[in-house]
Length: 377
Image (cartoon, rainbow, N blue to C red; front, side):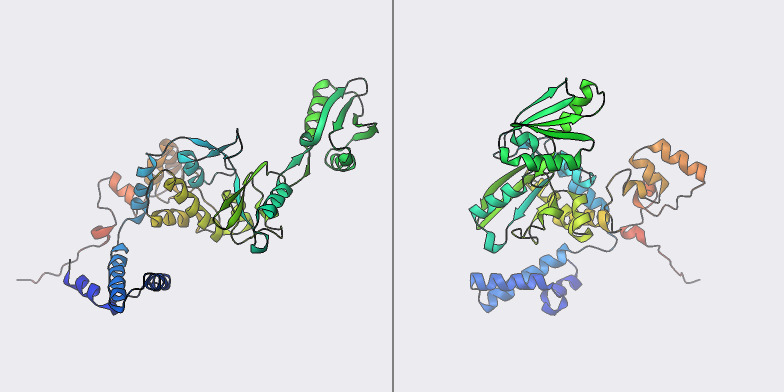
């Protein structure tokens, strides 16, 4: 260790710790009832580790982050889990979920929400009430039976609860035009005008029975559970914008795993935090310990433009200025041919392209040129 670095370690004023870290030291001191000397020793040890955690000038943080995430990711399983309490519903975990996050998939395989309730509504009864209110209800969930009447070109529907007849008629009329609707005793008859094939009637029938008549569209299942003092609602399906409008929901803690919905509803900073949280959680679930700073760097790269950019050929990797770096990733011939047609130039300012041709990389000691002025004899 250099003499200069040792002096930094011994001098308390040589470095300022972040406020959050100082607050944490204070909390630990109070909780553990540390003496003044013990507190000083703790602070000194944390300063040492803080200095060691910082970067050396010229360190290739991108390469280190990529290696630190991708190497453990090779140990991840290609698996999904059943959603607790809901047979047949699978939740994407493991490597498929990690790929989903870093590729910023437009619609996740299993969109989910974790809904927290405000303090005054934080009870089992209220949680069940909210869960019942938000779960999507379709005509198929409340009907007794449905049949096709080929003589009248109609779909006949019988509901379990006759009180909902008016609601069903009103909503179906709004969502499916050109239908004549009649009530025949306990049945509702949806008549299609003109000559139609049986296949067309089948399609209209499917539209009718899959019409949403209650709840929030897209939320197909819910599960109420308790975590410590909190009653939490987990959902299959996501509609963050509508859920946050409910008076019982704590908007500051409720989240979705849908990246694009988050950026639309809450903005790019919330999306950055979501990427970090989801990626870290996905890896930790399989016992993989990755330093959060590597994931933070990837999240920053994905969101620093103000929009979500995937890692991959159509995102970060495909947007590199170096022709050889783009060609080294994927679609080699396409990139080389395009560059030659456009008369592009590679200035060899990055890591990959310099490694490819055997030059010193512009990093670490390679960042600088040594200039010597020799005395003439």
